[in-house]
Length: 636
Ligand code: PRX
Image 1 (tube, helix red, strand yellow):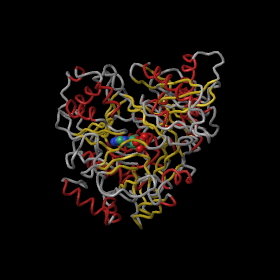
Image 2 (spheres, rainbow, N blue to C red):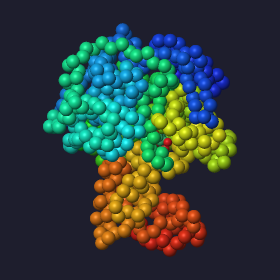
Image 3 (tube, rainbow, N blue to C red):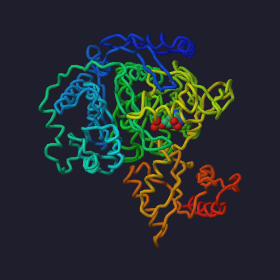
């Protein structure tokens, strides 16, 4: 199956066609798959109602397209390579045939637990092949997977389990990450105390750490698979049936469950994977993201498997046993396509070039970047030292809600430009608008990035609350999907993402809502009020800066900071840990009580010379106090 753009000219033609005749364009892309029944209509949409439906009436199962369809031609080809945390432990290779058999087997386990089409299944697991197997097993029987990144705390896990009414959790006893072994099941146990609906927990043995198994609820993965066979017919699903829910942070409230459906997601993820990465028959593709994030869903699991590639699942971290680990894995498995985040590149840059010396990196053909803007310095380091100037870098812009990459170079086909995501993929119609929603036409403009026409993997709803979906994405600007990102279109028409324009911060490529972090901080008994903003951070891209008003009750700032950090860890997880906590006596507020975040952002950035007009504040003197305290905090 070719289905791939080969030249810049072809890209331009295909783009033009996709805008003029989107339905014909996507119908052709969809025709390459196995459908149990062809769709009746390609598209129905209404952005005012936050609705997009693709391949309406079509029946299929995505796992038949990821697995069964390949068995005749590449059954013995390796589908997934698992590279364990310990450098000297043996990798596991699963061929398409083996993966198929394991997926069917676990699908039967889920069925034996009473899981049916439409039920939500929580997967809270480390990066082991069984996570990919469990995910596909859900899709096999029509259950909806909801992977929760195993770095989230018990309380964050419980919120997600309850929000999407999940009754079964698949987990592991523990996990290995670098030099640490982490208890995973015990976090699940703690979470489930607050999730009365959970009836079953299936536990994979990974670390061998002793477990308290709750009778009638907890069973071992290995015991369960021993009871079933590996034959499981793929459930016939509607194109618009849900495939998965993935929680992501927004500017207000608790994280929302972004819901994607089967047909459109499959078609778009496959098309974007092939075209952006330009994989070939023998490519060895490695995406370093965790399966718990959208990148791990779309471009570690579904995209590579749909296109019949070999994908790597890496359990470890970039700096263990040393900071050459990524490069060692690339040489060991002869990786051709390497996809990682700018934060990883920046942190590895910090170790200099010595860790690279033992490695050739000569198998590499394409490099990718995702999750946050890549600064020019990191781009050049990646290009020069990892790609040796020979590998195109695809800077891929997209979001959990978009399901797949929307703006990116196509490797080796369309031009690249440091720190630019460059051009939209065919089928994607970006538009820049000013704050009133007026279109900014032509080139050399900067504004808010929206998309004016649906693409097949667009978000369908936020689980259990469609109104929130409409409010967040479809109501800011009429008849457009609003991304929340600021963006520039340069004189040549290339797009450069400038970062979020809402109260969302991007820490090491992970989205955090400032409101979410504030509400965790406010759980500390002594905290009266807090305000969280992002500030530029050399490695993480953005760091979390918290301004907190406390009733100190004799405690020192140092003690309060430690305690507040512990509360955030407990409520969200270590990824939300504030980098700076400044205890303040007041916050800059307008007379109507609104916190002036613009001022706090400037202070956090260390840009205190130009704070704008502070005379309208309720208490202008508070700004001086915060500035003085911040100068101390920023030095620490
Ligand atoms: O701000 C953009 C940034 O990450 C946000 C999406 O986060 P999430 O849903 O967690 O998905 C991350 C992986 C797709 C976007 O709104 N972002 C993502 N990719 C890029 C980026 N910013 C700049 N350049 C990118 N390539």
